[in-house]
Image (cartoon, rainbow, N blue to C red):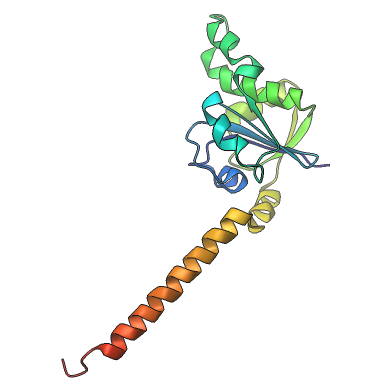
Length: 166
């Protein structure tokens, strides 16, 4: 069973954008483990994801993983907070190995590997996954196609109605 792992925002990452279909500007965790899709993010994102059963099976908040304690601990380096939250999400899900895209953040990859999590960087797996369109992506393609057809019909009508002598 392959576990897929992302940690990024959906603005920068095409993989994340494909998986969640929502505009999220802050980094979130996406796990697909055994057919169970888990998203971990800010409590501010909970409402958006709870309404999207087509995207996520479970939503965990960073607070549930101890974010506040990490922030309050002066001995914990601030630049390790994101990687530590990813590690805690991976451990909570019972994962010890995952497939990540080549764009996976190097500092997070190093942090996970140091903690014993095996990562397989596999561009092909993510490309294949992105080729399979999600329902919201198909709706967007269909809307674009209808708009293009309407524009072509309008242009054809305008050409037919145009004065050929001008």
